Length: 306
Image 1 (cartoon, rainbow, N blue to C red):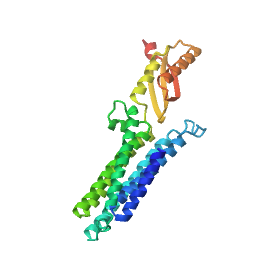
Image 2: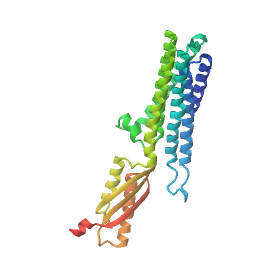
Image 3: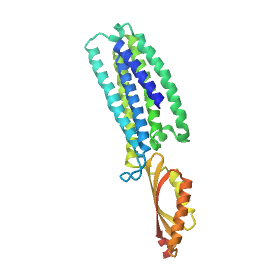
Image 4: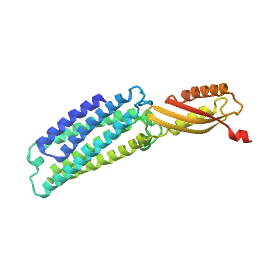
């Protein structure tokens, strides 16, 4: 991610340079987009480091959710710095075109610079996007890409995946706007390309915000993980049945489990403690992400009443 952050920073500088030479709004929107992506990757790195801090008395379950907070801030930055700025620039450029201002892109003599920068950036982003896809495939499994983004508990991969997809599509919009402006001598194409970039970034930002908000509020473990935990409990000798089971992600790889289990009414305290110890070992073997585990024994009233 450090290499991607450095690459994005360099790409942002080249886009700013192309904008300074030509005044193309699409290039400015893309430059700000790259700045936002660079800041986002820095935030994700910072959040990942903060999440590794050891638990304290004030935060007894650790700092795993720092990664969710960083991802949520990423969505806000994309929305405000990326999307809203691009829409503002599109509106500003539209007023200039309608007002009859000379087209800086066509009159600068540097019209070819943004084309070269955009084509090079598309190649670079395509390689980055391909890497993000390959890294996401093991975590994705047999899910669709849309479901993977909605259900992933680790925010970094979906964030990077959506960012790379948005970056690639945004570059295509910018190239379309700049290219059509050069071919038709109509600055409204540049306006359209800039507006499309803004709408794209806002759509991605809202998607990220909604999904990350759900993680911040607190999501249960995946159905597959819950099934493994329930099966491990039910298979433990001395556990008659699982009365209820609740799970909560404390972080991407940290799950809290709280369950009430039914035991025989004739069991001694020593026997119940033994059953709980065996159940804890079985759960952690079945689901290694369980870092906090609380089991409450209760009398099996269904068995007792029968």
